[in-house]
Image (tube, rainbow, N blue to C red):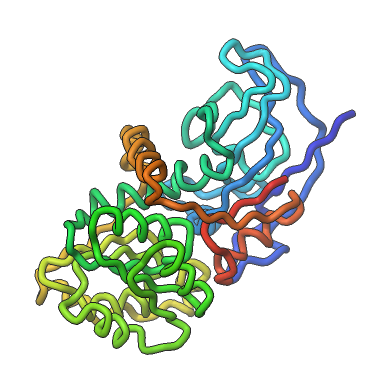
Length: 336
C-alpha cells in the first residue's frame, strides 16, 4: 500500500507557533475516481496570513482542528481520470501541506490552474502569485501613488514589500523602506532600488522617517503594524494614503500581549489622510491584468525577484515560523 504524508493542525496556536501545534501523519494514498486527478506536490508558499487562518475565522474560515494546514502550492499531475488535466502537467492551487492532493479541480479558494509557459514555480508562487498581486493592487489601487510622491514601505525586504518598493520606483516615486538589520537594509537599497532604508532594530524609527521624508510621506504601505505604523502616522503628508496590507508584528500576540492602540491616529484627521485595508481576493477578477503589468516590469528589468527556499516536507512548521522570526529574504518557499 502506497502511503502519503500530511501536516494537520493539532491545536489552535497560542502566541508563538510551536511544533506541538501540528501533527505529521501518514495515510494511504487514495484511489483516483472518475473526474478526479492526483497531484504530487513539489513547492509550498508561506505567507503571514496563514497564521491568521490557524487561529480563527478571518476572511476565510479557520483551518479546522485535525484539518490539513492551508497553503498554496504547485505540483505535477501524476494520475488523472479528469478530461481537463493530463498526466505530467504542472498545476497550482490551494492544496495544503500534504505530499499529494486528490480532487476534481476545485479547492476551497478557487480552481486549480496550469502553470503558464515560461513561468517557474518560484515566480508563480511569488511575484506572479498572490504576493506580487497583493503588492500591485494594494499600491496602485489603494495607495494610488503619483510620480514624485514619497512612498514608505514597511517589511521592505519581505515578499510583498520588496515588490512594492520596485513597483513604486517604476512609477516614479521616492521610496523609503523599513527592514530589520543592516544586511536587509543594504539589500533593499542596492537590489530592490529603494532610495533609503531604515533599520527598525536601531530604534528611532519616527525620527528616521522624518529625516528621509522631511515633507511627510504621501503613501504608506504597511506590512508590520504596531510601533512601525504609529511612527509612519506621525509623518504623514497632506492627503496621505495609508495602505493596510498586514500586521505581522502582532500575528502571534495573545490577548494579554496586545497594545492599547495607536497613539498617532489623529494625525490622519490633521493631515486629511485616508487609511484603508484590503484583501487581494478583492481583485480576483483582475489577476490577469496584474500579472501582465508585473511581467511588463520584469521584462523591462525594473522588477527583480528574491526567493528564500527551504527544503524538506518535514520542515513545514519551522519554515512558517521563519516569517515571524525575521529570517526570510523575499518570498518564503519550501521545496519538497
